[in-house]
Length: 295
Image 1 (cartoon, rainbow, N blue to C red):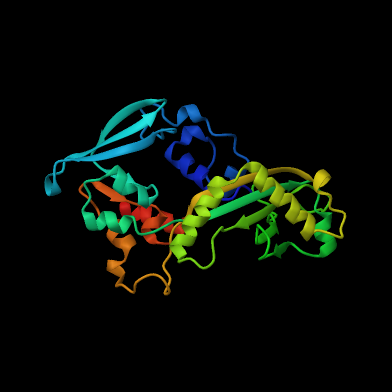
Image 2: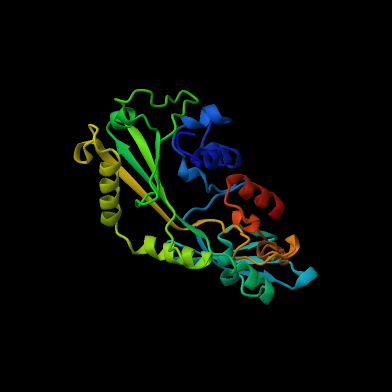
């Protein structure tokens, strides 16, 4: 999709709350659909309600074991605490937070949920006035292991549902730059923690300087002028980014049912656990699979 996975989320919303995005049923119709009618997401009397800006702080199971009758969920919204009761709850958040939301979990399950350390990600999108410099060099993507963003590429030209992708080098285009910050020499999970701190400690000015310097160096010898050709940039830093996946160097060799993500996602009374973390794989399809299992 031209907007990445955002259209997938909008398609899901269009099925759950049709009034919020009317007239959208498939890939073609969602791309040029009107903005979401946010006031209709949480309308009383509708089968499904989506409540935004509502951060859950506590989940408490009512009853014990087979006698559990439901759960209470406390959340913060608009500076005030609220509470709802439910027969069942799916926690689809970062799995490392679950022990803090539901401290009554068994110790072994809390330990398993705390095992993984998410992979930090930095997605930078730079809007260029034109991409004649890439055309001159004859490249669509550049790998630069020694620079701040090791991966730089022109955004794919998506043409779907009446949306026309970029075709001419004289047209504006988005350049996608990626970095997984780390610190070589440390164990893998410690590298992830170091990368998280790097992203949190940098200012936008730090990122902007690195971006301008890198594009100027990579596109040197062409007509590229950072001052004139960079129209805008969006820096998406994601300290708690991709779900942790196992490797044979640092992680123990365990039977599948004993792996931390499997132990961590066990049902606790009326509460089940989803998110791609519960599948130890950072992909949209994995998130779908875990949601289906949890429900």
